[in-house]
Image (cartoon, rainbow, N blue to C red; front, top):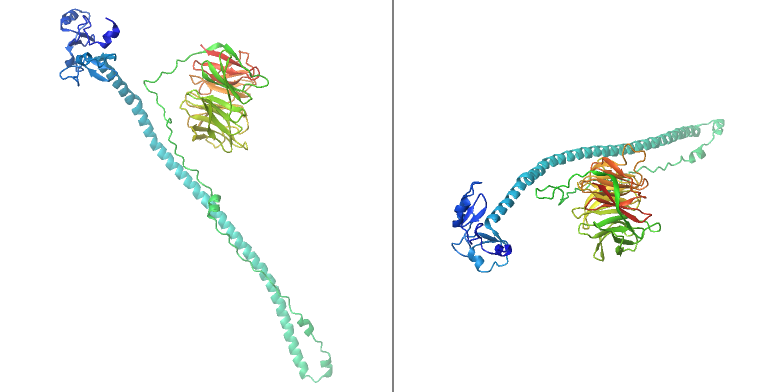
Length: 556
């Protein structure tokens, strides 16, 4: 009987194909009619357990036809069906499976869910909730530390205020002392003059009563001397002019607390599911990397090739020093060209998980996405220049940027146009990235680390998903020539990091913890730049001056 016809027919005996067998061997998992039970039991190679469907417990009564047992399950209708249901023709053409298999599949699905809940989800939730008391303790400790710092700062400010008041009081006392000296001197001089005037008055009274002409004749008047009154001292007394207390200035002088930031990250916690795709097997690096193919582009000396990003394993986007982004296939054929919205050159390019081209534009400080042939600006920066961009596994955009005055640099995670995370400083408050105006390449690794090739710093800086510094790589410890110009970075399926050493004409390969593994320095690379790894872990390398893209095999 044709298997397709049988799939749409009633359930049949596995031995004679009699329709509607009422029995089932629970050991051999086959359906039997009554006549074939004896024949089946003659097979002594194994034990048998022949029972009816009802005893097995997976032959429910049909909801459409009473007292009819359901032996099959219609997958399209998602219901158990009986012989009469099949005869009605309503399930003609539908995929029908044995109800025992459906039950088995359902129980397997239930077991998988149970295993996932018990072995993965429940322990993970327990781990997450156990971390909350630690966070609470950290919160309390941080508040206590800040309170101590505020108290100390308050004491310092009070001390400075007390010192300022003491100085004003000291100045006042000094001015008072100087004023008293002047007043005391004038007072003494005037008192001396008064004594002289009193003496003159007494002498004149004696002369008026005297009879001696010679005595009277010797009188010399001093009135002219006393007519010159002592100078009048005009002193402007000091005044205290208090400044109006400006609370805003006081708060500014005291300082401020940074704003509380509570971010709920949708993909903040990760968990391996038992049903998820398994990790790729560990493959050794090939002894001698080899060029698989060379893609010739129109780039070259006059328009140097700067970076690339794979759309698929056989198509890649490129950008040079003009305002065009070009899509090539492995046969060097130009498939598409797109001009930037601003008509200025793009700073960096990337491809999203859904295959859309993203580029950073330095001239108008924007990040744009190309949907079909329409260009949409998703991020517009104020006071910052975008230097590098990549799209990560969760669909977020990671943008590395510097300030217009070249004083600061940082990495910002965006979900669409919304800023989710900023990465700028290490644990000591020192900048992670150089602020100079040079292209910075950025990639997210398989373990969610964020890797930045910082040309100005001549280093690769790797932080974890939370933005905490993991390591900085400047070249292997044994090397005479250190990493000169890291002009490209990418990662592969095993989390290995590949770095373009532009001036030394080679590629560095590291493991995900920053340990040097080997160089690729045998493929006649000329100033390699702008790396990318496809889904098969083949490496694409751009050569600026030759305009070639070399596809290199470095795994066995």
